[in-house]
Image (cartoon, rainbow, N blue to C red; front, side):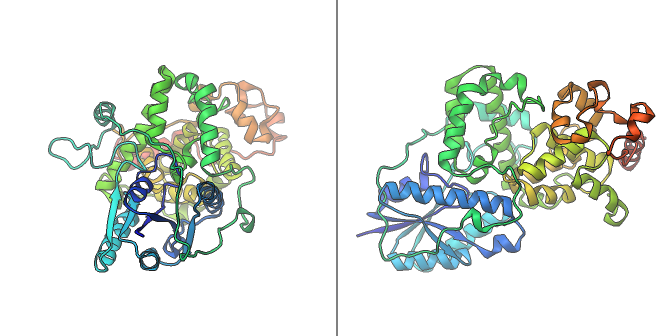
Length: 457
């Protein structure tokens, strides 16, 4: 009786799972394994919102495996030690794993290969599981990755994707291999009140609804803050309960301008993965060399606190930050705005904002979170690094009637549309009656400081 191990990481699904399929083809029995590595907790990534969503995902994965005659084995401890122990317990000759791009994932792969290889166990790493196209598959002439999105998108769009495969019918797991109890959402505290449910079943249901009634209007509505015309599939992409390959294929089958715009966003995700695969330190260091001298956190402490709490006095910024705290999620257009406001209007280091997002976002993905923050800060791949998003202009353009602002800033619920993004313009007697703060900074002064710091007076 032969055995293999599948180490699940950011691919918590049964549909379209190349490592699981390869393991089932190579062995009579397979151990589906998830390791709760204390290194994730030590690094500060095991935060309540994502831990709750993860608990849902693991419970759903286990349920799916049990319907197929198997089960999920959960172990607690250093990942290399636990994988090696499970391989030894079942006599596995192979361990299968989806390729990752973060520095942590790359180190994990190296250590697993060295440790398992010394014990005669073969590590098989599978590409295009966490992304639609493998990060290293597309390389421009004379460089190790694409630094600009548009040429990457053109090349990516011509790439032939592998077939998306169905979930296996049967998974046989060795009886001798035991695991720890599954984590439960109910054991966690400090969760965002409106945190969504996780798991492959929830993800596939949301995807079906999206393709049926949302994607057709995506091109026209994806920036509509009040209408919220986004897919909200990002948590499922982060945890891998949905396959990016399947998403691209199904969207293309649906067809239309909305589907094309949605596929472009999936490509943007792949773009960042190939950037970080080539430059792992971009998760903590500026991608482009800059001479920025960000304001010190002591000097900016009050502004940063107001930004985190949604009390900056700029309604669209505050609405977005309050949505983040309540849902563990934020509209993409709002993410760009609040990042621009923190880094360029308040002139605070992008890492401060990125850390706050990672503390709350259920889709808090090191790749996309960090590199989108760098894009907004002008230290990343943006070809217009000096652009500044004005919260008033953005509000009038993407929330013209104030629906989004009123939803999250109830202090302004009764303010008419012409003042809702500029409440300081209200008549003094009405302004005095609002329990809403004055702006923490004048936009013109913030812009002047930014231009001076960037040498663009």
